[in-house]
Length: 601
Image 1 (cartoon, rainbow, N blue to C red):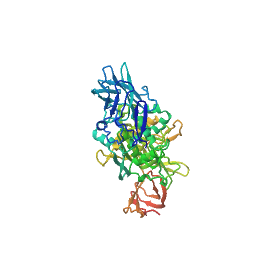
Image 2 (image 1 turned 135 degrees about the vertical axis):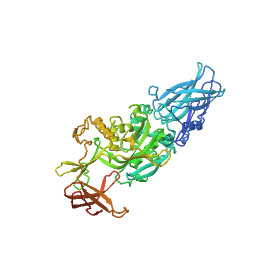
Image 3 (image 1 turned 135 degrees about the horizontal axis):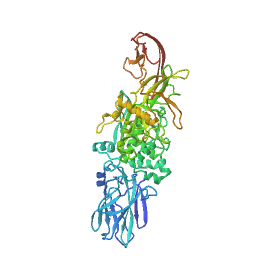
Image 4 (image 1 turned 60 degrees about the vertical axis):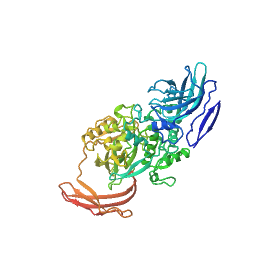
C-alpha cells in the first residue's frame, strides 16, 4: 500500500508514504510572513488514542471519535498578541463545502459548543499553544484535512497541519450510535474476535472468527469501501455528506460486502464448486479477505456464504465505530414473493418441485445487528437493526438488506424502512407444504406456524457462550400475541385483514397470487408419521431409519406410503436423490404401524 508523509514549507511540497497511513508526526511549519510562525504540531496520539478508545489502530494517523474533544499542541515562533487568533479549517471528501457539512471553519474560543466544530485554547506560552478541538456528534465520518491560520489586521499565515480520521462514537450520548453499556461497547466495538453459530436447530456448532478490525491497513480498507460504492462513484461530494448517518453508511456497507452489483468484497458460491477460489468453510476471519480484495485492486474474493458475509461486515462496522454483532437464525425462511409464507410444492413422493417452489427454508442463516437510533422512524425503533450482506433479494435494485429495526419486526411493523417484509419472513413466516396434482391443482397437506425462526443466537457479552435472542424478534410461538402480530403484518403489507378467508393479492408490477390466511387452523391430519433413528449415524455407513405411522381415526385405513430422500445443502436445496420407494400399509382404528426399516438404496 502507499505510504506517507507530506511536508509543506515555503511553498515547496514533498511526499513519501509509509505503512498504509499518512505519517503526520511532528510537522515543521513556517509562515510566509514575518509574523508568528507555527513551527511544529504535536498530535498527542497516545493521550488522544486512550481517551477515544482508538489506541489499537496501528496507523500513525491520529484516529478520534466524533462529539468528543481531542488535544493538539502547536509550537510557535513567538507569542500571539491580543489581536491575533487561530482559525482552523477541517475538510473531508472532494469539493468540500460548508453547505454540505463537509467543511468547517472555526476559531479558538473560550467554550465548546455541542453542535459545531470548536477549538478551545487550553493554555499558551510565548512559544506554544495547547488547543482542544471537538466535532459535533453528527459530523461526517472519514479522513479529514486540518489547516490553521494565524490572523490579525496586519498579517495572516495559513498552513496545512495534516490529516486525521474521525469515526462514529458509541461513547458519546449525543451520537446516534451511542450504546450505554460499557461491557457491550467492549464486546461489540472493541473485541476483535468472536463466535459465529452454524449447524441445525438441534445441533448448533460454534466457530471462532477473527474480526481483526485493528489489524494493519484495515481502517484504510474500510474507508476505501465507502469510496468504491456506486453512490460515491456517481456523486462523490453528496455521498460523503451523507456519511454522518449510520443508516446510510450501514446500508452502503451491506451492499458492498457482496460483489453482485458493485465489484464488492466477497463473491458468493452455494454450488460446492470452489476450484477457482477458497471454500467458504476454510475462512477463519475477515482480515485476509479484506486485504486480498484491496491488494487485487478490488477484485471480488472467492468465495463466501452467509457467515462469511456477516463476519466481514462485522469487521467493517466495528472498525468504523458502530456497535455490531453476528446473529444466526435457524430454520431461516427465504420468502421470494413477500407473502409472509414459505410455500413448498411436492409431488406424491414428497419430492420438492423445483420449478414451482420459489421459497426456501435454510437450516441456518447468518446476518448482523448494529446498534443505532432511527431518526427516520422515531425513538420507538432505536436499538438493534438487522443488516444482511448475503445477496438474497434485491432492495431498491441492489443486493442489500437493512437496516431493519428489530423492534419493528417484533411488533409486525413491516411497512417501515428498510426491507421489513423480507426480514419478518426470515424469522416468522408460516411454512406450508402443497401437494401438486397431475391436473395442476394443489392441496395444502401441511402447515406449521412455529417451524420458522428457531434458536436465534449470538455470542454472549464477555464470554463465548451462546445467547438465545429469539424473544427480541417475536413473541412466544403459538401465543395469542404472536398471531396478532402476524395478522398485523399481513394487513400492513397487503392492506387486507387476515380474516380467515382466502385473499387475492395483486401487487403493482407483480403477478397475482392466492394467499391462504394462515391464521385459520390447518386441517387436522388423519394419519401421522415420525421417523426414528435406529442406530447412531456413522460417517460412510447407511443411515437406518424406521417410519412409525399412527391412524388417528376410528376407522381402518389403507395407506400408500411414498418415500424419497435426498442430500441437501444447508440452504435445503436438494443435490442428489438417495431414496425412492413405496409401501402399502393397512392401519386399524387408532393403530400404529412400522412399515419396515428404511435406508439409502
